[in-house]
Image (cartoon, rainbow, N blue to C red):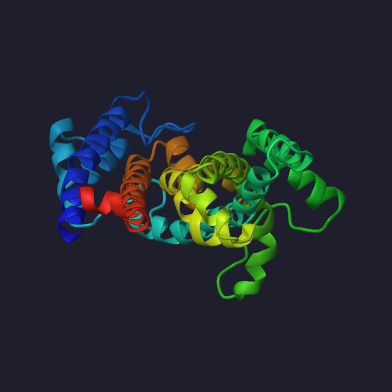
Length: 314
């Protein structure tokens, strides 16, 4: 297994390098620059800024310098925020994005899996149609539509929860909860729908297998059959889905973070793209790409743990 992990990590290096290279040159070739703005800087000041950040050097030299800094874990200075480096900004935003994303995924699993199992057990019945109808609605409504509707209804009309904002540091964990409820629900709705549909289809397929009929013939109850025999094989498609889903729910929370004014990585990405802050955008891209690679590796390892056949094939 260790050999497999090392092999996968080595395979990830060229993938990460391709992502960095494409992002770097696309950023540099895009119109505008980090010091463009409504107020035009005097040419000598702009030239000094370009020189201090190394932007006056040839593009390939800049690329080489960036890779060298990256190899040392340095994502560079922020062009707009002089008081914080990109490392510091992402270190502040990542815990926020990961907390909201992981809570949303946990909620999606807690709700989606039982709904999918229930729909499979009541196949073609009222419960099945109701669950799948709700799931289709969840898939059809994107979170950038759902989030503002939730903010208006629960925040402005009912006044149950804050519409936006984030507590300042040092106020205690409980002070964050009211601000996380709406973003977490907004992010989890689509994932609940997908997981419920996938679990239903997978469970129906497993329940039709001969070993399930044998278990029934032995007199096991439905709960025992699900828990002992059906749940693990039915979970395999869900596990395959979890890696991209967790990555997507963390990296795809840009809109939700913006709507609820949450200081996560997504907010820094939008801020960097708006200000043409090259290093900040590159930092978020590198971070997102690394998360995707790590999550795919973790899912593969989990898949091998659940399915012995996969382990033997490796």
